[in-house]
Length: 292
Image (cartoon, rainbow, N blue to C red):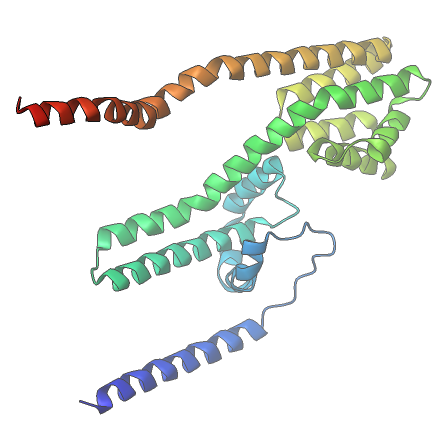
C-alpha cells in the first residue's frame, strides 16, 4: 500500500511527459505566424494562441469555404478581422470548449462529485462564448461609429467648404481626426483611393464593411451629390446635422429606458432588503410580546 502513491505519481508524470512530447512534436510543423500588419492580441488570448495556431493548422483549415466565408463576414463587421481569421476563430471555439470543460471537471473533482449534465452545459457555453464576444464587439463598434460620425462629418464639411475636394478632406480627417473605428475605416478608403479605385467604389466598400445605416446614408448622399453636380458642402452639412440629431435622440431614448431597466434590480435586490430592515424590529417586538 505504501508503494501505491509512488506508482500513481510515476504514472501521472510519465503521461505528462508523453503528452508534452506529442504536443511539441505536433507544434514543430506549424509555420510561424506573421503579425506585422495585425492588431495586438489581448493578454488572455495571447496565452492560448499557440494552441489556436495548432488547431488552425491541423483541424480548422479543413472547414468548408462557405462556412469560413460567413465567419469572415462577421469578423469584418465586428472589426476583428485584423485580430484573427475565420480558421483561427473556429480554433478559438475549440479551445474555449476545452478550457470550460477542464474547469468544470476540476471543480467536480474538488467537490468529489461528477455530473455529465453540467459538463455538457459547460461545453455548450464554451462553444457559444466566442459568438457572444463577437456580437458584443459588433455592438460596441456600431456605437463608436454612430457616436463619432457627426464629428467626422463636421471635419469633412469644413475641409470641403475651405476649398478641398473630397479626397483631400478625407486625407485631412485621417491625419488629424481622433483615433477610433471610423478613422480606421476612412484610412482604408484613402488607401483604396491611392491604389486607383474610383471614389464611389471606395466608399461602397466602406459601406459593405460597416453595414451601418448612418454610413450608408453618408455614402449615398456623397455619390448622389457628385452625380447630380449638387453642392457637396451643403449635403455634408445636412448629413452632419441629421446625425447629430439622431445621436441626441438615441441619448434621450436611453435616458427614458433607464427607469424601466431599474425595476428588475429594485424588485430583486433593493426592496427585499428594505422590507427586512423595516420589518425585523416589528417582528422582534411581536415575538417579545408573545403575539405569535
